[in-house]
Length: 377
Image (cartoon, rainbow, N blue to C red; front, top):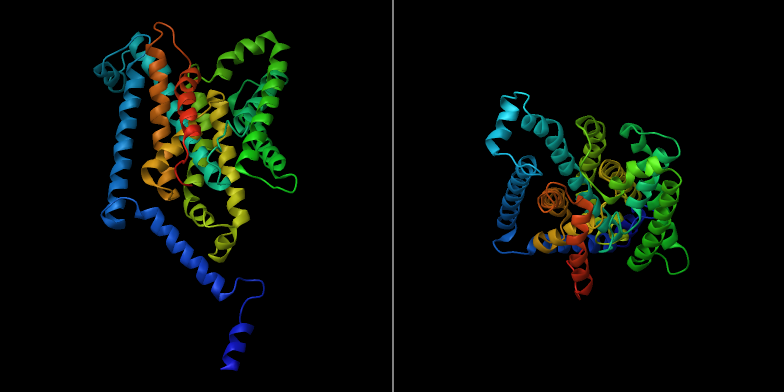
């Protein structure tokens, strides 16, 4: 009996959690899995069927909103004209506007919405902070400062070039916010992260404004971009940024399982085989790619990455295997919807999507802040 105990003890890996700790972590993992899949009736299989059906419904809504984005604007056209513009283009003004302006704008809205929605969900999951958002934590402002430096100081107007400045600004802002929030004995907390993000974002915005005031030409070029707009970008711009968005989306979706495990706590995650540091680094890389590409394309857009994951978690629960894809599909539905509304309410002009989304997002954010409980992380 003693030999058996001694053999079991000597066979344990030095520094690894004991059997009791591993069993406890496994039990917590099963409990977390039950929590993630337990909401709703019909058992796990029935719930999975409902959630898959919901993904198809959301994708269908996305198709409808995309069609509306192509057809509606300062001058609306019929859906038959939209179809003819693809199948039998004749060089008319309607076909030219559809193919060269509205289709790239719609595709850009799809990409920007998906990237910001997924980036917000990733940041909230990793930091365990319901207030985490690429804008609220200063990541968007850091990317915007990088683009401002590229355009204002170096005269770089090619999106394929200044997107690297956006990536650098986003990465530096994220690292600085985390370092500021983690300094001191108390360590990081949701409130400290939010305060550090807002403060750093204000600094980045102030520096960007100072640079723009020094160059009227750069200011005229960037004033609509800084408001947040999907207008004015060509298919070539979209093609240059699409690879970064695609890599960020794929990487972010692949992180669902390790992020689920980390929700149990760092020690439990290690006991269940998750490489904690690698998961954090990969999540940071994904968020940097997503926010850098989206900000370079459409400017800093607030609230997209904050509101959409909240709404998604309220509907599907905390399981990141569902939260991440739902966020990536639902965000472009709302962003394109806001863009179409901005075109319709100010004909023949338009209200930039950044303004429309702020009008929509600010009341929702206030409502979330007033709630006693938010959707579980």
